[in-house]
Length: 316
Image (cartoon, rainbow, N blue to C red):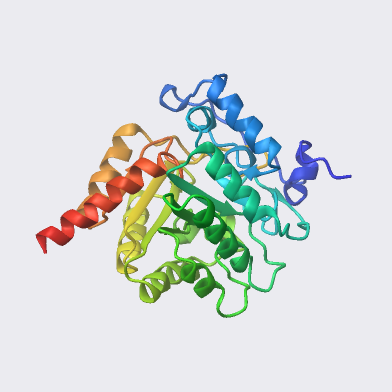
C-alpha cells in the first residue's frame, strides 16, 4: 500500500533528484501553526465527508487562517496527480477511479460550512478522456442545488490531453469564476511545469471569454523561481491580451529539498510594484503579496472583482 506521507512514495518522480538547499524564510513570510477551534471544526467536517483539499495536499501556508474561518478549497478527483511539476507538493502517480458520489459530498460540505463563495480545484487527470471536465460540471451543479446563493470558482487543469469539448463542458455548467494558473513565465516551463504548454494554457483562458464573455477569468503565477521582472510584466501583457480579469502573484515556497529551488524571496515592496503595474495594464482585480495563493481570500476578492466590473461599466 502506497503511503503518501513518505516523500519517496508521494513523489516517486523526484526521489532521485539531487537535494536543493532550502533557504530560511524571511520574517514577512512566516505564519503561525494552526490551532484554533474553527480550524479543527473545518478539518473534522472535511474528514467526515472524506474530502481532499489543496490546502493540505499542496501545503498552503494560509491553511490555519482560512480553515479557522471555515474556508477550504475542495480538491476533487482524488489526491494523486498524473503530472509531476517540480514546484508542486501534490502526490504524483496513477490515480484511482473517479468517485461518483464526490460531487454530492462536496455540495454537502459547502452547505454545512455555510460558504458564500466556494473554490473547487483538482489534480490533473490525463488518464481520463475529458480530463475530468464532466466531474467538475457535476460538482458545480450539485453545489448550485444545495447552496443556490453561493458563488462558485473553479481552478481547473489545462485539459491538454483531453478530447475536444472538455473546456465547453465546464463553461456550460456556469461557474462564476473560471481560474487556470499559468504558474510561471514561459522560459521556465521546461523545468518548472514540464507537462504543460504556456500558450495552450493562455489560449484556454482566452477561449473561456469567447464562449461566455460575462464569465470572470482568473490566472496566477509564482515568483521567486528564477524569473526576472520584465518576464513577469510580459506575462501580464499576455494575460490582458487574453482578456483575463484577475491576476494573482505569490511567493514560491519550496515544499521539500527534492522540489525546484527557491531562487530568491521577493520583497513586499516588489509585490506592491507588481500590483501597481497590473492595475495599470487593465486588470479588474489584482492580488500580489508574498502569501497570495489562488484561493486566498477568494470570497472577498470576488466581491471586489464584481464591484470593479460594475464600476467600469458605469464609466463606459
